[in-house]
Image: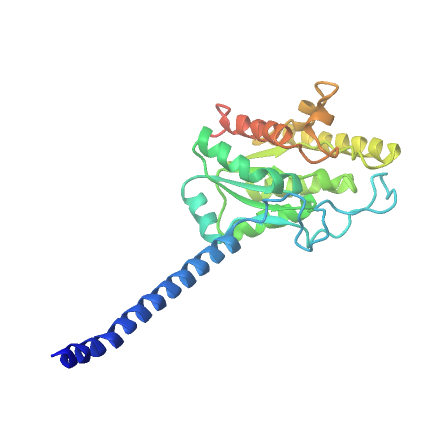
Length: 281
């Protein structure tokens, strides 16, 4: 009898080991699947968590410039490898389908656009798709606008948050504004954030040139708005200069917004413009 019991126990033992092994394999497979899913979310997350991280890892998403250039601010350096935030295609189509907003911006927008997305969702219920690229001049942003127009079509509201990198060549700016408005057409509202630049780490002469070139760009925007009723200027520069201490309080380097004060203020101006009655009908 005892021998029979032992024999039955020995027969059952391999089955128990097999069951344990199967459970272990299931756990390992589950962990691998969770790891892959987590990795996918990391890849899809826009690279804007750290505003001072760049695509090429050089530690700054501002464009390096050399010499005074033709207009005193220097010359625009290479920007194509700098950090960017571009909405995936399926989300772009969703934004368009739900009458959302397209935005084209530079490094300030790269830094601030996640918070703007949340603000708009909470305040207006609008979704927004981004093509924000650090260092890009207006010509490159308008190229992107034209490409999206061909690939997806355009919504009735477009935000242009570029122009700061045109301080290196202000005369080229006006033609790009006209090109953007031609692509958008007269029945869409184009909101354009005007510019303020006076880079605090540059010599006094360069800072003064930055301010003069910013004013030149803003004047061209105002002249375009006088010709195009559907162009609405978001007056970031006027906001900053309304009080003597505002540029220093709201900008961390004379160009990019401080966090959270400057970024929140700039996003508030954009949101208020979109909320304004009579502009979006």
